[in-house]
Amino acid sequence: MEKRLIKKESLAGVIAELAGKMRVCAPMQAEDQVLFRVLEPSERPLVDFANTKNAPKNFLFPRTETLLKYTRTPKGMVAAGGAEEGMKTLFFGCRPCDARSFKLLDMLFDQEKYQDPYYIDKRAKTTVVAMACVHPPYTTCFCTSVGGNPTDSEGADVLLTDLGDQYLAEFITPKGEELLAAFGGTPAGVEAEKAKEGIAAQASSEIASTVPAREAKPVLDVRFEDPFWSTLHQKCLACGTCTYLCPTCHCFDISDEVKRNDGIRIRNWDSCMFPLFTKETSGHNPRPSQKERWRQRVMHKFRYYVDNFNAIACVGCGRCVMACPVNMDIRKIVADIVKL
Image (cartoon, rainbow, N blue to C red):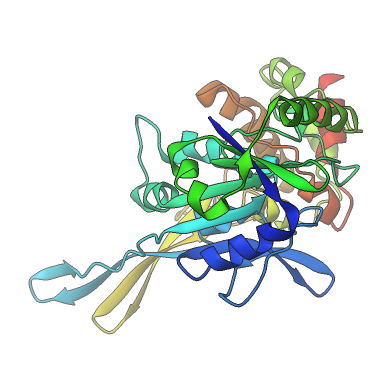
């Protein structure tokens, strides 16, 4: 693995130059928020930020995505293509929690039994440059409780660590190594690696929240009908904010929109928090209240995903905690479950 030292003042210029050659998605200031969005060729990304309000998942698994177009003829349906092809893309500035979310999504969309060609195409054409959290940005961060850490390289092709006046750039994968010429820099020595080790240890120690996430599954295995679920959901507004901001939530709905003889099939994000999510054509809904919906959300992340992929479907970014309008806190929910 190639390791380089990159001067701080040169980094934003390097990324801005790359934006003239490929699509670059990066953190950008938007009034009082930082959003992950497409960088225009004349723009420079933020390199000093806490985390983005939105997760970069949207560029691999779009909020709305055309799957195909078709035309109805007297002889039947004729497909006319229409799927949105991925383009060569650089994700710059993902925090380690978001980079790790891509690995979790890979488990679902690119597994042995099922491959989603739309996601796989975009993922193959995307290079991820992650930026380590030297100081975890929020008290709501809990990545160390779900298998990550603030300087984790999982899911990243390049990892940048702030060493003070320069960045340690670790080119982890072949896709990352393709950026060596663009980044330049000088070879990193033993001192830089030792500095990175110290930063990693300090950053992990600064994670204030400890969540017993790994201990939840044995309880969830036997507490499906527990009275706990009848009290958990009572203040939930079913707004879906937690699922739409989550880097790993991936529920979707597919619908056809037809005008005369032409139609498109589109995939839209959906949410287990919504009343219509499991409503059947007959009118029956197996999850008729928010009780069943919240149980599904928790079970999916901390039990079903573990059963299927041996991984917790949460990266501990804390977005759902910060954004919930009624202060529902997944950290407390998991802690309460373990006490059942």
